[in-house]
Length: 280
Image 1 (cartoon, rainbow, N blue to C red):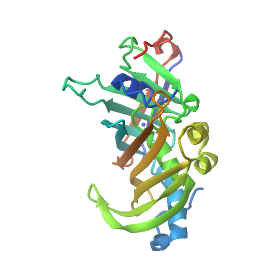
Image 2 (cartoon, rainbow, N blue to C red):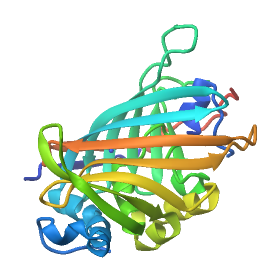
Image 3 (cartoon, rainbow, N blue to C red):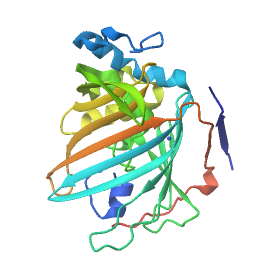
């Protein structure tokens, strides 16, 4: 068994939505440190946002909370996650909590997800997968590039989407969890983001650019004085491959406690489920 251990101690909707029984999926770097005041103008706001992913790499790591709201056919569900992410190593770990079913019964057990360049690993996947086994998914093979498949957008992929910012405006100053931030609103282009993304997310974002209903992704981003994303909310839209109806997804990522130690171990081949996954 080959096992990879990654540690950082510097200054992480096919599967999840299938488990819910809601089949909604058919299958620039700015230098320097602080965000300048001139980031309030349109052109400068675009540059500031395109550089926010690089600011996270400089920060090293953080804790993360995620929320994904899906609406289709009059049904709305929210999936929440919490964990840590290493922006230098592009590795993260999230515990994803599924909601109760409409009858009020408890939802699926929390799914543990490991996020790595080009891959998503899930434990407690259900659908006939043994509890002690992981499921490995190639993110470039997903029609949404894993922006929604796991029920949580990879925190660094959420920031890399901002590399494709086409238009942006400065909304004003506010606070996120007690931290002063600048609020920007704009639209990112998935195809542009894919071209500018790091190697680990480039192919996945290319897949998303082809799989979503539109390459344009509206967003609200909140950056601190170091140019780091503290909160970002994306609104995705695509066509349900099963019912052919429109699906709206709002994905929110909250980053805090920068410099948090991160220890992510990717499972070895013996720990990965190789059998057939049951159909919902």
